[in-house]
Image (cartoon, rainbow, N blue to C red; front, top):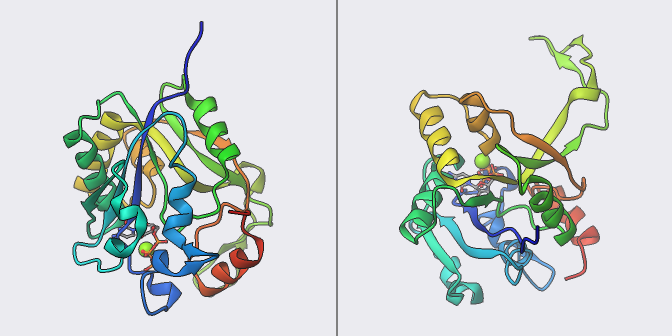
Length: 234
Ligand code: CTP
Ligand code: MG
């Protein structure tokens, strides 16, 4: 059976303030190479076969986005983000529905602050999950020995690290299923730090797809310093 490239939508949550970065602006607007971090992030998706459209979820009063060249790109729509990352993603999904996306369409959610995603990892995720009943995420097996702490900051135990992974993005799910899972989990007050945890909340088991460990999220100043020395050639 001949099939074309998997068609999908993208949601980029970018409504955070980057408090841990302690910079003069949200981290997604800091320079990385010749452009801003968010532009480097968007680059991996734009121009890919299969991309239907892309939503960036921004703070309502964001003054930086309109200054970027990609703000004029007709494939990109803007949505107002929310209080938490999950609220921003949910707003992005609603914007896709308003744009004509279908409930069964694939959506990839990818952090604005994760600029080092390679096209190889993107294609691996799409190809691995194309026929998956649930969807899944890029993730990396933990490398270091893990310690579980007690209340005094002493080691309480050493879990079996062979079963632990770090959850990365993109995370890829069907639009309607993800919207319902996020709505349920948020409504119940569950902690939802990624899309997979919302799917888990409703009883589904997202697939772990091993990705590159350098697809890091910029969180602290040293992450940006590391990326400026190591990031992929753009
Ligand atoms: N994000 C969002 N809406 C929020 C909070 C976060 O869209 N209400 C986005 C961020 O812009 C970022 C991604 O989610 O691209 C991952 O979040 P994180 O790394 O925590 O970014 P910030 O919340 O901006 O940083 P911090 O937690 O240090 O303040
Ligand atoms: Mg945050």
